[in-house]
Image (cartoon, rainbow, N blue to C red):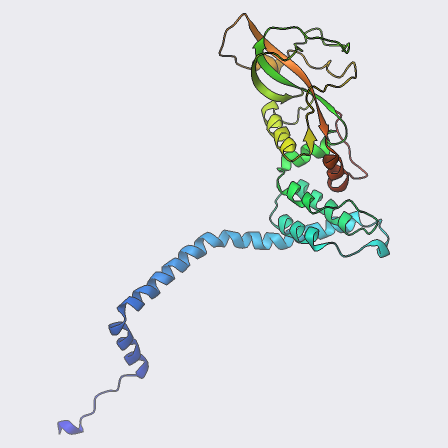
Length: 282
């Protein structure tokens, strides 16, 4: 009679899973591990999806800005831009959150699409990528890339006198001095640049010098008699803390000139200058 009794059949899919789990426990664990890794990867990459969406929005904003800049250009003069300029511009713009930098990208791309222009250069994309939004604002709102600017370094150095051979008209409390043995406290300073702190301004100028947009010719000063009249022992200079108490040393302003390079002037004309530019003459 037992021969006539039939056992319930086991579905093939269950058999296969049981067989697989029994003979391949490592594979089962690997599957779990892969699932865990997937959760971790998803966790860390999820924020990047936001940037992918932002990229679309940024590209739209770039297109609108370029259209605005080309609105006065004859249709027959609007051409396809060089891929060496257009592609890196679009990619770099896609992840920027700065409208100031975006406008520089838009100016560059618009120049690259104007057949009558010859100023667009692929290297300008890399320059913009290495600018902070504040540095872009600095270049847009001042005359740094337009004409030479009077600056000084602030030093703690041996007491000396200023050989005023040019005949500058100086503030009565000036501390303009000749360069002698001592130490720089702030390498680049101009009291007329008030948008940013003197320390931050000095760092930004250092980067602009590194990018060869600006230069400080050795031993060069401006010849305008009033060029250095606004340098004196102002509140910022007085606030500098000197650890050394010495009757033989003093705070000093060493006059210099910071000038735009030819590369810097062309960069300004291509990427920054617009018909409505308003800048502070430093």
